[in-house]
Length: 208
Ligand code: GRF
Image 1 (tube, helix red, strand yellow):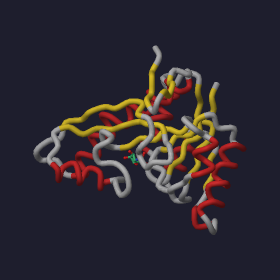
Image 2 (cartoon, rainbow, N blue to C red):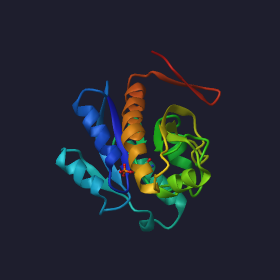
Image 3 (cartoon, protein in one colour):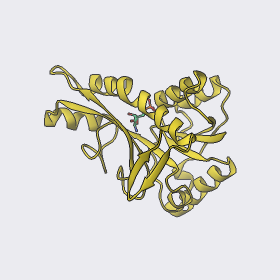
């Protein structure tokens, strides 16, 4: 059984999707062993509590340098014996030692079809604003492994969502979450826990 550490900063609806998937038996060979938040006020922490999942808070401002923060986060994840790290709306940038320690073992969910509307500055509602501004007919979500390039790691699963002429960034965000993010994130996590994901030449191969 693999230990899944879920990193959060906000509402935690993707965490909730993972909890629901765990309860319904959709996550095979894995369990959410801890929730780590960058912010003590995140509602995601309440979701963890309600479901009996251990949680911790680690704040960037408690560390002087990026390097010290990275090392502390890495040490916490090792202490928690995490096999997989899931970024479910985690808003703090980390790098170096965490990425090295957990190569191809960190999964992020991004609310667009990468490589569109991703990279620096594309987070939260900004992603959907940009998609509507460009007038795309299809957007969606991407579950991908995390490497040192922002939103640039190997793609695991993508799911498309149609835009509507009367969409606002808020309505589009909601549909992308409901129709894509909450579905593909648990799926990607379950595939990982079953050792069905292999990375070759920067691409993910899914074995069935
Ligand atoms: C989601 O849109 C996710 O794609 C992005 O951050 C948001 C997190 O929302 N990375 P929640 O905290 O899971 O509700």
